Length: 65
Image (spheres, rainbow, N blue to C red):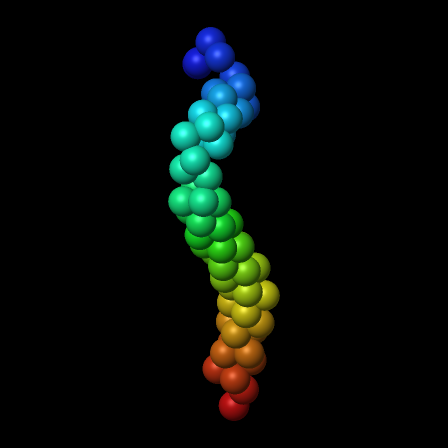
């Protein structure tokens, strides 16, 4: 457990980044991370919908005479 909350250290890191003008590379990196998280979430949600549906259809076809 860290004695300093993560939000405070993150805010200080961003403030230092703004001062040293590394903000454009940080913004690009944050955009890439957000895009990765969004695509991962969408794939997970698609799996939650598609897998049960596919299993149901395959079981129905497998049980038919």
